[in-house]
Length: 310
Image (cartoon, rainbow, N blue to C red; front, top):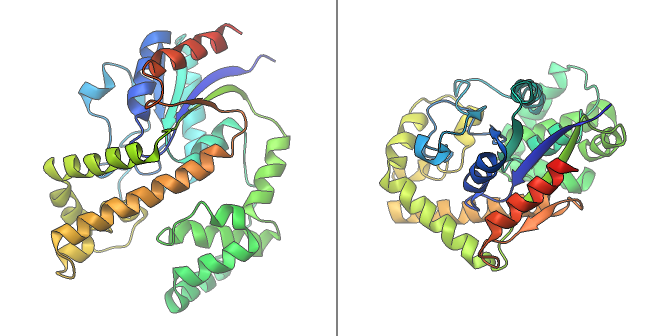
């Protein structure tokens, strides 16, 4: 059976994924499916850099601002929703273009990663949550690093939910998430995919873009948006978005605004490093470098057209 062709545009935050994906979609009759674990939430326009109507340039975008911030959203839900979007896009004769920086989402979709069956065990989950409260996320991440260093390297200490999930999978199944990923890859995928990775030859240029983006976010209302979400009180996955938790010490009076923004920029750079670590592991990626190729958009579009003809 002929596999559905799917384009993926991936890269670290502030690398220009949305812009490149839009140009590709315009060139080949595509529609964009967001693969961003935070852009799915409603009302988080600024912190998650949800594309504006002007940035979309008339190209349909899917899986952006679809659930309430109080809800949880899993990798499995993303894969299910994205598959449905792909079928819908292809049924209209258009090309699915995945765009986003959440590597786990992209790889789970394109490579058929299902992580196996993990039995529901509230006792184990409660035990891990209790340990999190008593021992802290750093201790649990260190434990995960001993068990599954590959997964641990992609997680930040603030991402407690995924740290707990990775430990839960291991203690309930005896297999790490990394092992389950490798096994599921052997089963093959429903898709024939072109994986376009945006990389900066000079990493400082990416960091400059990150700093500029943060400044623009502040100018366009990040503080007001963050204060609104922080004031909700309850701990949700959405509140882990970079841009909210780093500003919390400012609102509580612990940091000056300058200190909080410096920390936000630092944490965003660290996040970008983890994304680069994830995407670089893909041996089949096609890399474009905006700072080394003045015509990188044409380079990417040419590769896409060649792929679609094959």
